[in-house]
Length: 144
Image 1 (cartoon, rainbow, N blue to C red):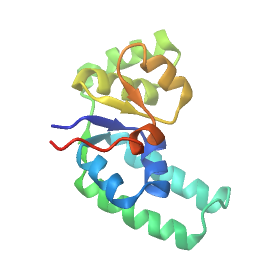
Image 2 (image 1 turned 90 degrees about the horizontal axis):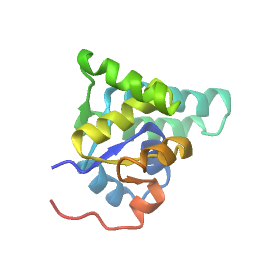
Image 3 (image 1 turned 180 degrees about the vertical axis):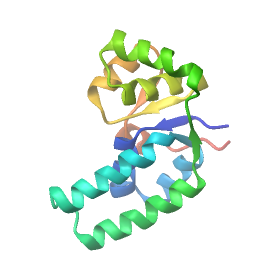
Image 4 (image 1 turned 120 degrees about the horizontal axis):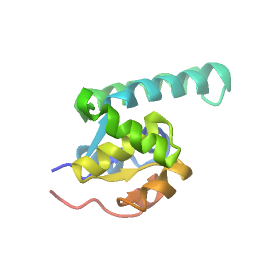
């Protein structure tokens, strides 16, 4: 059973800083949204070519790790009938539609939302359990 929903900010941080084995163990117990694919790709692009935070070699290593993750991690996709529910969360909580999608999916699927986004975490923790990459890496994953 999946336990965590990782947003793009936490997935990127775990892939860059997390212990590989612990990260992979968490990813086996995690889901991502289909939009995470685009957010992570955009982040790698920006960090490599706009801010120069990543060297091209680091970017290539990260891209290879991320590709493996995308091929094995369960992806959740909102359905057309969930659009209005997500939009309602976005409007009522003043969140982007992307962030509201993570909150909705975590709540709908009984998952712990893992995010580095402070605004999203502050709003989400009123409704569901939340963590960030640091608190996730500080605890040993439970065997499923």
